[in-house]
Image 1 (cartoon, rainbow, N blue to C red):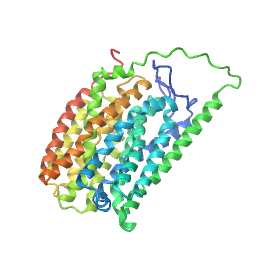
Image 2 (cartoon, rainbow, N blue to C red):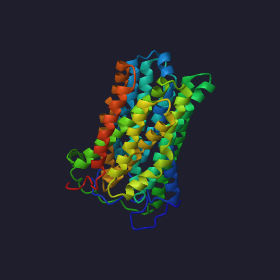
Image 3 (tube, one colour):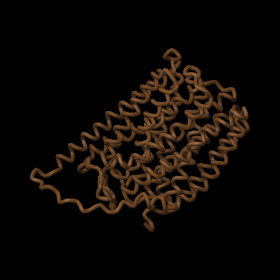
Length: 437
């Protein structure tokens, strides 16, 4: 697939027209050459592969981790909510970091944090260190989560759907792969959960290398493009008042997208945190539960390359999001009625429902007209959305512990999915956050 430009929209590497404040990040790119674009594409894929193993590799081994570290049920339930908390707290810092250092440098640092956190977590001797090192890895994931749509908008403004689909596919592959192979890896390495989850630091190191290469290559391209006798640029005009944050707080579009993002994230993290346990409690072995979990996460690998481009071609995304949510409701119903007998079918239906996430990412690029708007909207929608999703996994754990089965938790999950349909319909309208600003 060629990355060259063939239509009238701004070429890759060229920022979309915008009226952003003058206080922007130091330039990290010159003209985006084809080689640089391919390198950025590889970086996006490698980074996306590392955005979920910190979570999905833990779920199938949670019982073993709890036993070894002496975790209580409450702490284990809290552990399923930590990702959303970290994404909300650290994700909101991404715009400021991006303005100060540039999105490429921040993503590189985020991947370094993921690698360090996963390494330290595998060495943890107690619950406190385990939680702290998990938070470090999740902080790195948080800033990368926010800046992925920004990098796509900046370098591939005419290919938002396909590029979002590409890195969403890689993200799903990372989540599914970690869920499927972590238990066999741990068994092959002497039944060591530490090695099973620690090996996921290796892909993180590869992502760090790729983004450092992007940073070095982009700066070299910028230097080569600068005229030898260039004179200092004239002083920039005074920055326009920064009203982006105020606009977002007043924007129904931004709030609808944030609520939708939060509800789909709630569903995703409940599945990532509890689906293997639901299957294990139904009498399914840990290994098979891990494979079923991988099916639920992995089905979105091929679908993520199809669904976001489809969403970008639709004038409104509400109907598509409704279909995805109905698939989730059918999966929950199956887990209620026959969790063992129809286990594979329910995993497939939940995998289809998980495609709401790449559609949400694509809509971030669609609901803003400028790259400046995208970085603001991405931080707002994701940080607010992850705050909304915080109680979900913990509530599911508390309900399960209180009732001793999964019926009430599944009813709770179904109610949230109905709300997701409403929020998705509102967020999917053909609107922009700049409208009326």
